[in-house]
Image 1 (cartoon, rainbow, N blue to C red):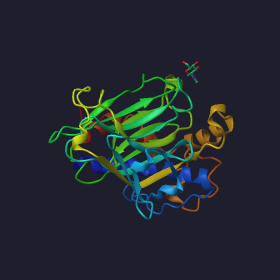
Image 2: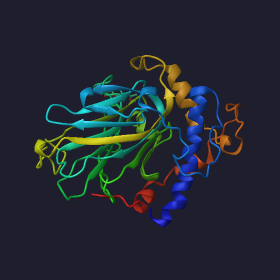
Image 3: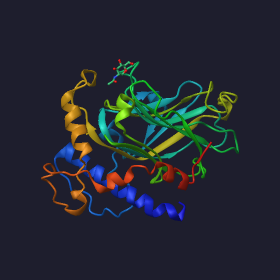
Image 4: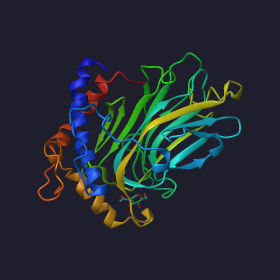
Length: 316
Ligand SMILES: *[C@@H]1O[C@H](CO)[C@@H](O)[C@H](O)[C@H]1NC(C)=O
């Protein structure tokens, strides 16, 4: 991490923790699980085992879970890719995984970590993506983030980045914070892209419940240099490894097709006023009332450009 990024990342971390406190309140009615706002972002966030929040999505034969369920490998071979999905839909939340990408020649191989409701809303879906676009042997991996709201990419399609590390040599942490106010993509705890909500965005800002997807698949037609380099199965199989799974959000209770007003109010209303008192008073069980908009959250606005410039990830 660039030295100058540290302080900023920490202030972002404080804001994210405020958000997380709200989420715990939303889910369980109990806040205060966080004891140190200064702790490194995510190090305090509870991880879960696969069984606690996920289900296989496709290519189950190509999925291997560790005995404790905390590490999941998914493989693309010549027969199929593989993927899993959160068992619930979430209306806002914090989603994270440590990801180690397949090594050597991976042209055409796409690994994706993303939120979507595309299975439910075909024409008006929302989506927030990290997508890793394969690479040729000894070339750098490229990554992109995407933002769709209500079927539209007007607010932020495809920002691409070169990764400043070898994502196949060791796992790195990729995280998405989605609140009613802001979307932040993090790499190793450093914010690399922020999309603050503005009133003019309307439904271009993702605002329906989404599930978390984790997939590996054959993107030969477009992924690597616009499809110039296809998957070479002689160089496979291709395996991506996921661990430190984090799924913290306001669970959508009803059939999300019904666009439940209850969910909107329960999840979005409280999120907008995420109560930062939890950071100062750990016993903030009476979390409603005069919840002011947290200063930390305010501090997030207008920062994405700086965050991006200071990040070592280079848009390409
Ligand atoms: C979402 O998009 C659909 C189709 O374009 C449109 O009819 C609908 O009004 C949009 N929803 C909102 C909340 O703007």
